[in-house]
Image (cartoon, rainbow, N blue to C red; front, side, top):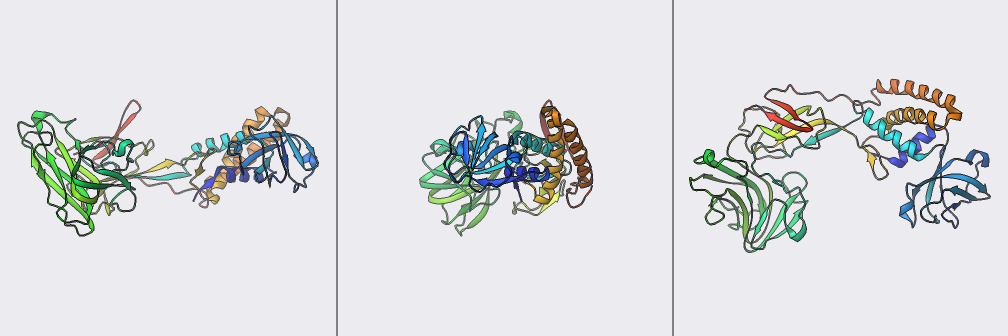
Length: 420
């Protein structure tokens, strides 16, 4: 579930005593709104804030807030002017305090409550020992010129993203060949030429095809003049994990892995190649400090969607996916986003945000400082009770013992280290 910023502002305003939601019903201007349905006492609304929650024709004014200066009949006048004219159908809120203060307080509360209102994070972007450095799972979208990032076309295959026919993640690569077409990636950038001679390169990729003897994968050591190929896909309308293996010759000039087909349409996913064990991996940006909490490894190399075992396991890890689980930070709500909470748990967020908001108002609205200080204490007590309530807080994610794995830091760069 998720709660939008507008809903959070509504919940905070109701909690602090005043919230009105209405719609513009008459012709407006940059400084006026017409609303025939307003029946509230004028003295109550004077000097309050108008916040545009949704716009019928002028989207640029959404999120803008202005203070009410006068009320004449059914017309509200605000200052300063909105950037565009208000129009019939615009939805607006009337709030007791500046919406910017609400927004800032909500964002600060989301960060400070990360220990009890956290976002479950699961990352499966690391493949053990994989030498395919860029876009091995084709999760990065096909870009300009119809090229898949990291992969180089040979001849003229048509490449597009596929989100339905896939074996892992959210994307695979749709590959249309008119003739013998291929794509390749060079994988020797981090390998010493002398050290890998005589060792075996293993290359595997998942392939979906409907034509037999039309799609296969391969390895080349001489820039694409000669190849060691896998078997062909059997063409039985399903995913197959094809494999090519080759020993590195003494006279190699490059190590390339190829995906290709002849006069066919097929799909590629989860390409991986390895020679030697790799121990150090850049920590995915999705995993916040101090995670990971848990580390798993793909149990069956033929089943990338699971099950997963606790790392380490008895399997050969090369070519298998790591599953990293961590306690992430829920998205601080901005003008264009939601926070990943249910409304029940959002009540704790509202209470903590109200503490921050009234602390700010003590400085911005010194004439009511004593009242704001009292509100701070009220909401602090509410936060304390909610933080200890099973209804509002999330259960802490248990951690795995860091047996044969750990994290390292180099300045601001973090790494996952596998003890091999």
